[in-house]
Picture 1 (cartoon, rainbow, N blue to C red):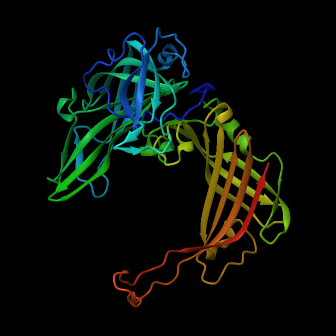
Picture 2: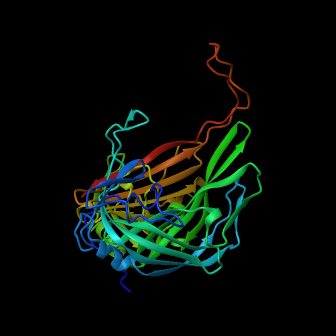
Picture 3: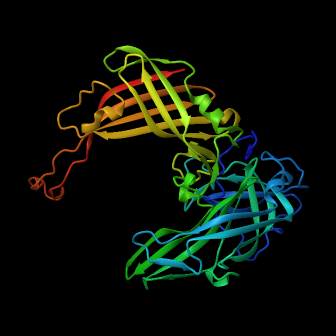
Length: 445
């Protein structure tokens, strides 16, 4: 099967499906927000203002394609297994009546209007300038739509009008708030802590030709006298694939290495980042040799949106594949295999591939690091091998490092107090572990 999630298309950060502001609900109508094609300001997205310009028709072109192209894969019924979650350690919430695994159904039908959506930073927030750094989504196409969400166990039987949004061909998102007191289904929440409750529940979903993925989450709010706190509560995830366990909340679609994602297959991605020939490297002792690197797939990958990452350039759709990295140098200094991940983001000129692999072994099994004749400082407890390689349209590079780690002994007694009053007290404790680089080599292609 050749799973074609996305065609090559002008790529921008799809930072809208999982960080958006309020819209929709169990009831509501978005179809009357704009008139005559004039731009208007709608919801806020991650602090950005959304400007909605009504399109003349569903075939009208925008930077993000047409509404008709979006509906070609999004206007249908989706089925997916849903995994109902339990509270994390320290939380007290629970939901019912469904528990464990269930079945989710999402049906999308088009509304009557489509929009060109653009986003701008507010000039100021609470009187403070934003500093000119933009975290806003790229221009998008939006389609008013009616969505029905049900589960076989009856927890969800919801129907709402909302907006589908997309700025990358082949993937659309929706995000709607939920009100436990107004649900059509039987989903309820409770808490073993009388001072805690779930607030701001929200359903967020991604729609593609290959299926749907999403989550229901809220915040657990705790108030006890003058003490208040809040923590994220993940209520449900679909489809809950093991391949996406490392994605944000485990939300993502499992993809085979031969499936086409972001304009290419995982097999082609790994071939693009592998070394065609041994690379010339120089070790830390200035000795030169050649290093061969082989990168092989070890299982299915995960496509996810990566919207909640701290580095702006890493935001947007990406696919991650588990891999095995094999390194062997001509001088015999390294010959080993390491488990890691290959991550690809962007399409076309914006395509970036990064592979990372790391292994830690204790000194008693230093040979498992793949490095020979290792000389580590006295007191070293373990060895860490770190491999990285990166490829974009403009450059390709890689590196390998070997570190020795050690943990200094903990102080049994507190050191003398500070001589200057008010500069802090001292207490016994442990320093953090230290790392000593034993070997390093890098290459550019």
